[in-house]
Length: 252
Length: 134
Ligand code: SF4
Ligand code: FES
Image (cartoon, rainbow over all chains, first blue to last red; front, side, top):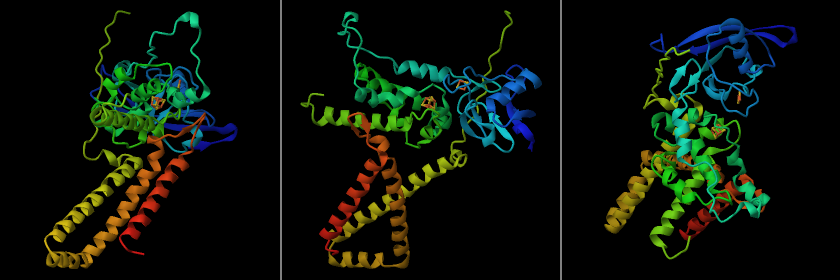
């Protein structure tokens, strides 16, 4: 690392490259990139692509931690490249595509599995149909909003999946973000779709695959705390089971 | 344009028996899980004690004697330490599973975790008192 005035710095990057048309397996390629210390890792990649190697493939869009497309492994941790600041990485920076997902090309991972799981949990409001447009907007109190707000902050960046060892070992696991979103809608006062979502998430591929490692919550850039959502779904599903088997006379 | 792109996604396998060495947080998780084994062994020991108790005073006496062997004492200290570690780790994450909302505010995690510690201490005192320790 060399550093001079203006916070300029030569950053050594080790980037995992994979070209499906020519490579049998991915391998690291080293680059030395002139950077400003206030840059984020995404800035370094953009400089690299614009000036040194236009063949590098990676995803990004917003550069401000809202689109969720720049997730990658940075020194072994799932991070948003636009949130990982160079000043926090004094040495060589090792960049790989998100763990647990197949590699499409270079730093681009295959997100199809996650998208399919998102669809399965119906992450939208399922209303009872009684509320008509003429009645105006649905009103929600601040307390009702507070119940689910945290779980609504998800940007679908998949960092939690890259952190979750259960997902790595058992790719059928519906996983942290999708179940958190299901929970978010279940907690919404305007929604009546819980039974439909339980079919998907209160299952062995759903919450019961989770052993509460808690890594998802550690890495989530939006403080969604998916581990909390999953444990809450477990508690609620267990209560359901007892009500159904021992207290069927109790109206849910 | 029109040129065919070949998709050949590369899958990186997760090593099924050594994945937890990759990150310290995975090791902490394994520590929590492994310490529960000692709680399991201790529970089995309690059941053995019950069986000996029902088998008559002689059996019971020899069971109590065997518990005083140095290896058994070491096991008990280990099991106690691991049980405490296991309990603390679970108490500390309990707020995730049991959020308490009062009006617009969620109770701070310390309230839910603290409640677990308080109930645990009270129950322990009660059981020790009931067992005639005081
Ligand atoms: S829960 Fe967090 S880490 Fe997971 S996809 Fe949503 S924002 Fe990303
Ligand atoms: S580029 Fe949008 S989240 Fe990083």
